[in-house]
Length: 170
Ligand code: FES
Image (cartoon, rainbow, N blue to C red):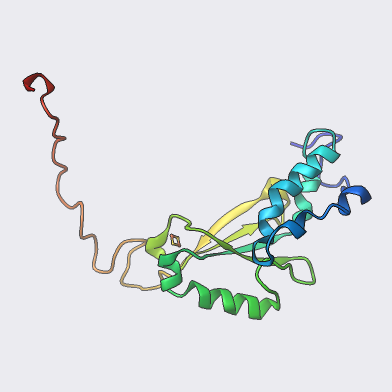
């Protein structure tokens, strides 16, 4: 909710003193995105203990996250990442020259059945209009939604009642 001192059209940027802090230099080149929490913490301290909504929007607009965990990697997530990086002309963790896109790796998105997985974090409407969408490779028309080809193969019958040990009989 907008307020007089916290709304999207109020400009915000790091102070010169905070710009000179080299937080990003503490992180390896392929994990610069891990600096986002300390950078937001710095922004919060600069702003007197709370995080201005415009400060959250300084971090970019479209973040493409490619799953790098084993099931997605086996199903070609590295190839998808290469295509994205080539197409956008950036390295992993870099932002395009127009400041719109970045590509990063993410660990398991909990959707391995649809590997390989990509997520798009969309900040184009600011942090208040933020959306987070999954995209996956289940384009096989024989699959229905996330189910296996040919239909379900497990949990087809009525569940069996739970078995409990009779502790009084011990
Ligand atoms: S391994 Fe990619 S979603 Fe689980």
